[in-house]
Image 1 (cartoon, rainbow, N blue to C red):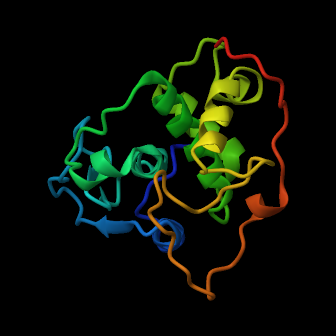
Image 2 (cartoon, one colour; image 1 turned 90 degrees about the horizontal axis):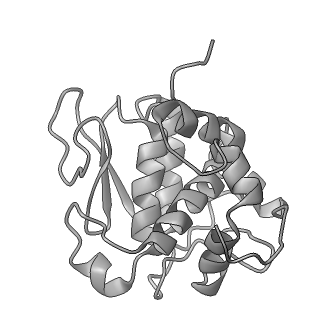
Length: 194
């Protein structure tokens, strides 16, 4: 039996997600149960985005919050400045967002990429190779290249904690390094075809 997807209402998840988004200069707003979520494209309980803010409520799936945060991180500054609900972007950016949300999960204690990919599959994300993990490992060269070219990951595929186009990350010495800081990504072949 597959466990239910991780939701943002878990106090440990909320605190670590708030800290993670803060590293990017983004804000997390937790709305009460049943509240209308501002900026949600897909409707509740999916996360919403307006400006530099990710809106969630306790039943918002964590993968949704990370996905919408990924949009904020991956979009150009001009779109980010005028953002309300619709992230826009092209297919390559969407691939980058999906890949980035998985990397972001590694920065959350007790979550990690394997669990997030399981939740993405359970929620209905669809990839050509049949699962999120297979896409991430074998078919995401374009996403990795996009994230690196935009300065969102370093040459080893580690998070830069900066947004596309120069939104400076928060500089807080109290934030701990993440487990992802010590890992590198597998499969660095250069196949531009998805």
